[in-house]
Image 1 (tube, rainbow, N blue to C red):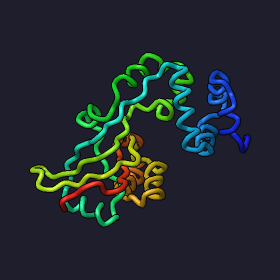
Image 2: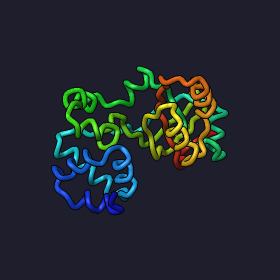
Image 3: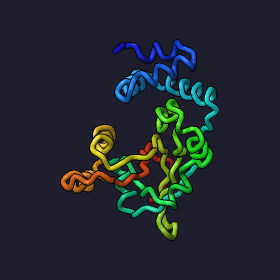
Image 4: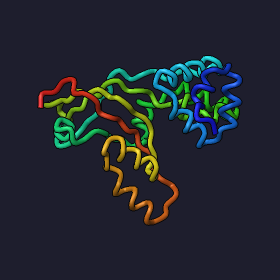
Amino acid sequence: MSKNLAKDYMSKSQQERDKMILGLGDDGIEQLFGEMTADEYKQAKIDFCEFHGCPTTKPVECLNLIMRREFAEEILRGEKKVEFRAYSKHYIDRLVDKEVCNFVDLKGDEPIIGAMFHDFINEVRSVKKIHFHNYNNSWHLDVECTENGLIACVKEEVEYLNKEYNSHDLDEELATYESGKIKNRPYYFYFVVGKILSTNL
């Protein structure tokens, strides 16, 4: 496989790019995106969505989340880098872009649309800022959100959080599923915490 996949991809027309994607397979696509710079990936996503008429998700400017004070203090001490929420109707309604989902429902059978689902086509809205607080709003912690998305409780994805963010919140749950060889795993929304913006703690 070429060592310059990203360069080859970016030099092609979108039709040629689509053919390339379909011929790469999952490992090849992972290599392609791994070689891309952030600017290349951003432009490639724009080109893909414009060519295929795919709507882009509308960002969440500020997401309000209730949190226990002890976890907020862990964030302040730099010990907690990732927060999770259940893949439930409450959070789906707030974080999943229905327009993108409708597009995928209509065109998901097309091979290129299916191949790029969760990559260029992502139904989870990006979150810019999180406002953590308790039930009576006696304290708050506002933070930048540098990354968010949907993650399954499977080895590869939990190890990604371990390696990138030293986050081990799902380790025990993963071990339970792995020991029982349970195939159906839960999904979670995850949020990577960036710089502290404001707090009264």
